[in-house]
Length: 308
Length: 288
Image (cartoon, rainbow over the protein chains, first blue to last red):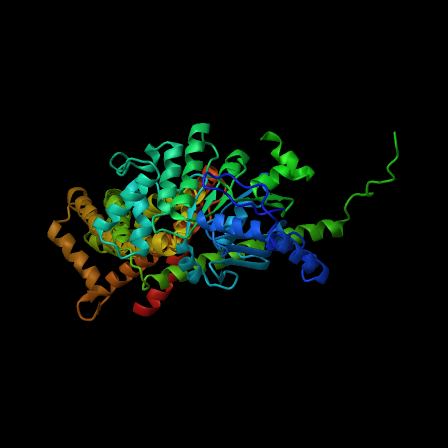
C-alpha cells in the first residue's frame, strides 16, 4: 500500500515510494521491531529524493503532513460488532473516500468522527482533540469545525434555501444580516446555484442534485476545515453525479478543505480521492491511493473494483 | 453424497420449566424497556425545563409555536367549550328542576367548567390537535435526518425543538383554558336564559357567588382560578413533552411517524386524565 501524491488535475503518481507511516499501519503487530525499522530506514534512504518530491507536490496542492482526522484502532458494537480495530488517518487537505458494501459501517465511521457515537475502544481524534471523553456540549462546539452533507441532504424543510444556508451563521457567528446575505450568496454561487433564483425556494421545490448542492453550501457556510459527505452521489443521474464530484474536488483545490466521503460509487471515488479506505467485514481491508487500489492483488479488492 | 460428519442438535419439546423461564425472560425484557422509556421521558422533561433558562433563547421559535399551539387551536377549543357549557346547563336544569333549584345552574356550570371540564377538555383537544402535530413534525425531522443535521451543525435539538414547544404550551394552555371556561359559562347562560328562563343578571350573580365561595389568594385572585390555571399549565407540559418524546424517538420511516402521532395522542390523553386526578387531590388538600 502506498501513499501516492496527486497532481493538480487529480491524477496520481504511481511510482511514488511507500510512506513509512503507511507501512506501520499496514502491520501494527510488528511496529517497533528493529528489523522492520531497519528496512524502513533503508526504504526511506533509497526513495528519499522521490519522497521529498512527493511531499512537495502534496504541499503544493494543499495537503499537509498534519493529521486532522484520525481513527486509532477503533472498535464499535451494538447488538453485533460494527467496526473492529479500524485505523484511518486523513491529513489536512486530503480527500479520503470510505468505500465498501452496504452495511459495512461506512456511515457509522462518519458518526464516530462527528461524535454522534462513541467507540467501545480506540480513539477518535479531530483536529488534535480526542473525542472519546468530550461531553455532549463540548462535542457541539467541536462539530462547528466540520460540515456534514447528508445522503438525503437533510435540509430543514420548513425553511427556505436562504434560511437553511444562513442557519449555521446565525447560530455560531455574530455576522450582521447584510453579511449573512453576502455569505449565503457566495456559498450558493460556489456550488453553482443562482442565488436570486433559489434563495426563496423551499427544499421541496428543488431537484435532488440542487438539494445536495444546497446541503454542501450549508455545510461549508461557516468555512469548516473538514467536510464530511454521506453518499453524496447516491440516487443521482450520471451528469449530476459528475457535478457533485467536481464540487467536492473544487472544495479541496480552492479552499484546501479536508474531505471524508462515504460512498460506494467507486468511479467518483477514483476521481476525487487522494486515498481510498475499503471497509469489509467490519475492518479496513485496503487503505491507499486509487492507483494502489487498482494495482492491488487482493482478491476482495479486485472483486470490488470489478465494476470499474 | 459425501458425509460431512456434522449433525443437527437434537431438540425435543420444551419442558414446562423452560417455557416458564422463556415467558419470564420476555416479561423481564419488556419491563426493562418500559422502565427505560419512562426514564428517558423524564430525562427529556428535566433537560427541557433546565434549558428554558439557558442560552441561546429561541424567542422567534417560541412565538411561532405559540401561534401554532395557541392561536390555531382557539377555534376548536372555544367551540367545544361553548357546547360543553350548554350541555352542562341543560343536564343540570333537568336535575335541578326536581328540587326547584334551577337558579343554581350558574354555580354548577361554573364549578364544573373552571375546576374540571375547562382544563381537561381543552387539554385533551390540544393533545389531539397539537401533540400529534408536534410528534409528526419532529418525527419527520428524525426520519429525514434533520435532527442529525441540527446536531452536526452544533445545535442541541432539545434547545431548538423541544424548549420552544414546551414554553409555548406552558403559556398558551392556561390562556386557552380561561377562554374555554368563559365561553362555556357563556354557553350555560344561553341555555339558562333561553331554555330554563333564568334572567341573565341572576345567572351571572350565581356565577360570581361560586367563584367567590372558594375564597381569594392575595385578596384578589379567586382560589378556583388558581386551581383552574395550575392544571392547564401542567397539562401543557405533558402535551409538549409527550409529542417531542415520541417525535424524537421515531423509528422506521413514514410508518414510524404515524405510530409516533398515535402514541402521542393516546399517552398524552391518558396522562392528562391520570395526572388530573392526583393534581385535584393535591389542590383540594392545599386550597380546600
